[in-house]
Figure 1: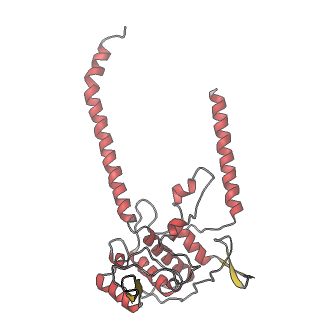
Figure 2: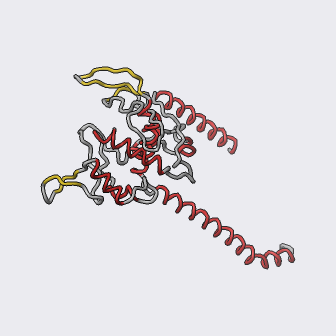
Figure 3: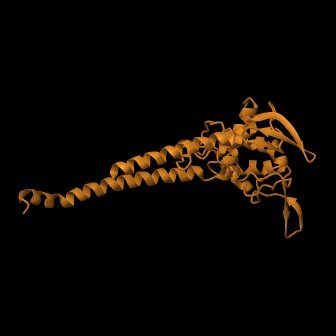
Length: 269
């Protein structure tokens, strides 16, 4: 009976692995496994990279895509881009950010308490939660091995999408569509990045890959602004549970030590 159970379990695992590989191969979508500073249990957002990502979003992405779930004031939050309150106000003024006021029934200049504007085009998705809505890694079907070691890969998906255009185009119903390896086909967004599309203030070379990584990191922060706090809380919880386990083990030994010693002194009936 035990032997039959072991054989069936091994067969099921083999089938799961083989179907997972077939699924990955049949999907025809390529996601590069980039190394981001915020990944891993001890990873932290690179503040300089977040600032560069904000610049790429503002100068390239914001023309079409919005961040309507992200308050402007969070740009000065700890663990984020780290702008001061004055810099947030300056950012709003420099980029002429306006919001529609339902009470005034008119547009007005945004304040730090307002959110980023929504998407300017109806077919341009909002990017606030994009890295949480996209999974870059799936792994063997049913086992979730890749997410265990690499994470869900939303950051990698966004960065790969921006850097893996095939260069092919086709026209459908009067619209030009662009081929992309990560998307796995054709879609309406033309390649948004090119070398030197922005000029970084810190002197970093603005290559397509560098800008893609920067904006992907920034969009990961917009989707999970409390990621660092959650990691710290998780580490603290694991540490406390470890100490509690040791204390419970020692307490258990102390309580049952007299009982065990008496049991050793008397033979079993």
